[in-house]
Length: 53
Image (cartoon, rainbow, N blue to C red; front, side, top):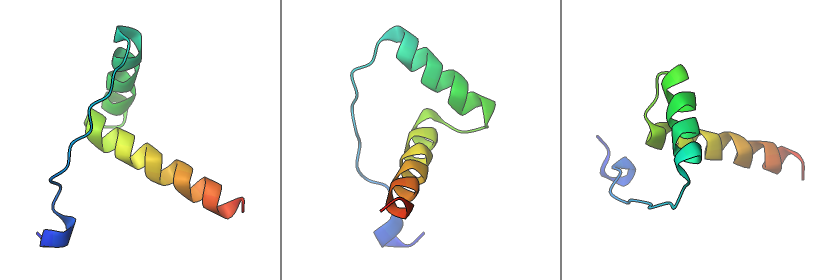
């Protein structure tokens, strides 16, 4: 794996149980971990916002 792409950083979030369960269910429904799902959602939203400028 390219060292510049190696994931070494973490992000801690405070969530309600309902929010965490919702993220877990959404990620599971598309075969992703919660981390993968959150990162992918960020990428998609960032791209949408870029195209609206």
